[in-house]
Amino acid sequence: MDHERYDRVLEACSLKKDLEILSFGDQTVIGERGINLSGGQKQRMQIARALYQDADIYLFDDPFSAVDAHTGSHLFKECLLGLLESKTVIYVTHQVEFLPAADLILVMKNGSILQAGKYNDILSSGTDFMELVGAHEEALSALDSVEPGVIKPTVHEEYSGTKPLEEESNVGEDGKADDMAGIKAQLVQEEEREKGRVGLSVYWKYITTAYGGALIPFILLAQILFQTLQILSNYWMAWATPVSPDAKPTVDEKTLIMVYVVLSVGSAFCILARASLLMTVAYKTATSLFTKMHSCIFRAPMSFFDATPSGRILNRASTDQSAVDLSIPSQVGAFAFSLIQLLGIIAVMSMVAWQVFVIFIPVIAVSLWYQQYYIPSARELCRLVGVTKAPVIQHFAETISGATTIRSFDQESRFCQTSVQLVNGYSRPKLGRAGIQTTEKIVHGESCVWHTKCTSLMMGFVRIERLCRG
Image (cartoon, rainbow, N blue to C red; front, side):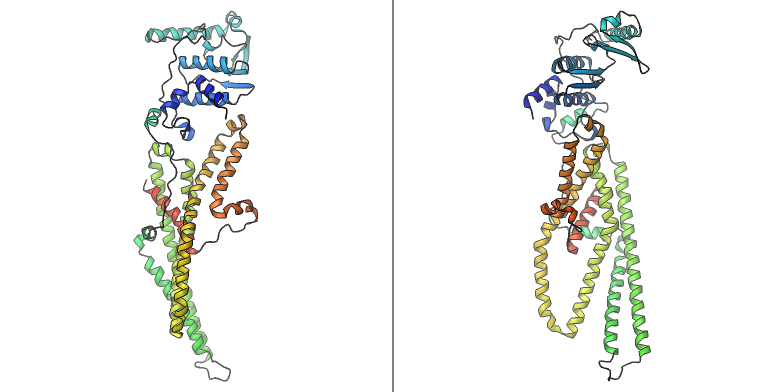
């Protein structure tokens, strides 16, 4: 960074006073589309960016339209006649007071060039240009008669810098700039990220969102019946099947097959009821959550959109909502069903040989110890994944909307590099540093136990549920 040129550009564009007003100076985060800047500040900042590039040719499209007369005069003197004195400058303007200093003037009408030449030469020709200058002087005279205390420059005024500089108002069209200046914090805050374990209240909130949790007991009952029928079918086959070819069968083959078919059909119906009820609960929960989020977003005040990047909202409405729609029901259901199955297996094995508890207890203890050792790190990594995707979406949206400006300033490589860094930041919690370097070789980016997956998915539920609360 060239600090000397940076300071010269700030001085030429009258931005130093604005930086003093902003809470964090030149480190203040500017909201989307410059929401916390006035129209004049936006224009002067755009001029400053162009001046800092130190290019050979400059093209300005009405650069003084959003500033007052004195600020425009200062910009013209310090920028176009000062820093750009040795540059080729082409500027479009309807303010004729800036034309006397131009080397060549092109008068255009209906897309065609009517006249070309010096200011005095065109002025003496007595054509449309003379009418434009006359109309401008009449407007200035009328304004002076209404506001006699305000001194306005004329078309023949020299840019000697003797006039005192009066900054344009820092209040934009909607009066937000002064409000933003009084806030002693960045407009766009870092995204909130929970710490510690996910409380049981979050899981309880999820399972009771649909019908107050009335269907949850039926889902668990269907799984318990299914596990019971599975155990009975295995027990029936073990009891009714002869232990050897010479042994006499306990029941005939027809009875053996019929009982086994009945138990199997009962298991199938339990699976059908379990899946139907689970999907009903999942659909109702996802629909209710999306409806609340949709309502809160459309009814949110404009200050919410000023301070919240659109990528963060899109992340909630896409990735997190997709997790609530598709992943959370299956993961929560898999946990409950696996736990019931495990308890059933332990019950059967303990009835056959109680000595298995000698193995079960140490294994369960070791598993819980490993779980407590692994889950805190995995949980925070999952949370990092949740908050690092929004910047990727936000940067992509901003790059697409500002593609013309990016190309005009030849900043494609910088934006591409920033995008790569954001994508790497999003991928690093999942894949690690080595995984990022060999991403194309990785088929599955992560292998987490059910608890870690549920924790990761519930993060999305928490973020959406918080957004619904506004």
